[in-house]
Image (cartoon, rainbow, N blue to C red; front, top):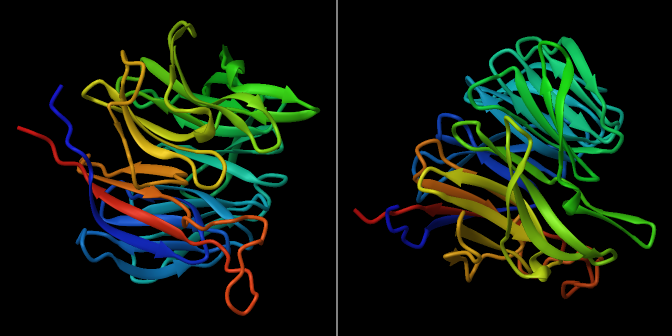
Length: 349
C-alpha cells in the first residue's frame, strides 16, 4: 500500500441553513447537498479552490437528506416521503418527474442503477421506480422496522442490500422480488429503557462486491447515545460475518458513512453528540486508525470524487446546539450551519 499523506484542505463551503449530507456527482464536477429548508444546494467544484454555487433545486416541501446522481440526473427525497428527479448539470435545475407520496413519511435513502431507483423509509418498505419517468416498477417488503440504508451491488444490479433500525440486513434478488438471505448486524442495536437505539446507518459494498459493510454503533445506552463506532464486514455470497472494526471511542458513537479504498483500508466519518466525531482511515487488519482528523468534528457524511483525488466531508459548526441554548447578542437562537470541508488526497510516489 502506498503511504497515504494527510488530506489537505482546499476550501470550506459554509452552508446556512445546514444540510444533512453532500456528495459528488458521478462526473466529479458538481457537489449536491440536501438542505433542512427543502432545497437541494449545488456547486460547480471543477476549480477546487473556488467552488461556485449554482441555482438550487426547490421542488421539495420538506427536509431533504438523500441525493444520488446518474447520467446527469439527480434523484432526491424528503422527510414527507417525496421523491424527485431533475437535471443538475443545466444552468437552471430542470424537473423531470416527482412523486409526492412515494413513502408514508420519511424517505431515508436512495440507491440507483441504470434501470432502477430504489427508495426506503420509515414505512418499512422498499420502493422500486423507473428512473426515466418515476413510474413504480414494484416494491419489496420483509423488514419489520424503519429501513435506514440501501446499496446496489457494484457489478450485479439485480442484487440490493437494505439495513434497518434493529440491525437486520437483507440481500434482495430484484428479478425474483425475494430476499436471498438475512445478515445479522444486531450488534448495532439495543433496547435501552424502552428506547430503540442504533440501527444500520450505512451500507457499502467493496469494489468487487464480495464484501458488504454495515455501519453504525455498538450502543451502550440511550438518551444522549453512547456507543463504539462500529463497522461489520460480511461475505456477500455466504452471509458470514468476516470481521468487526471498532473505529473510535464511545463518545464518537456512530459511523455515518464509509468507503472501501483499493489500497486495503476504509475511510469513514463518525459523530455522536455535538463536538464529537472525526474523519478516519483504518487498515482492515488494524485495531486503530492510522489517520484521524484533529480539526474536523461533527462529521455526518463523506463523499469521494470519482477519481479518488478529493473528499467532501459535511460537518456542523463547532457551536452547534440543537436545543436552542446558544443565543446571539439579541437573544435569538443562532441556528446551525454546515461547513463542508473540501479535501485533496495526496499520495507518495
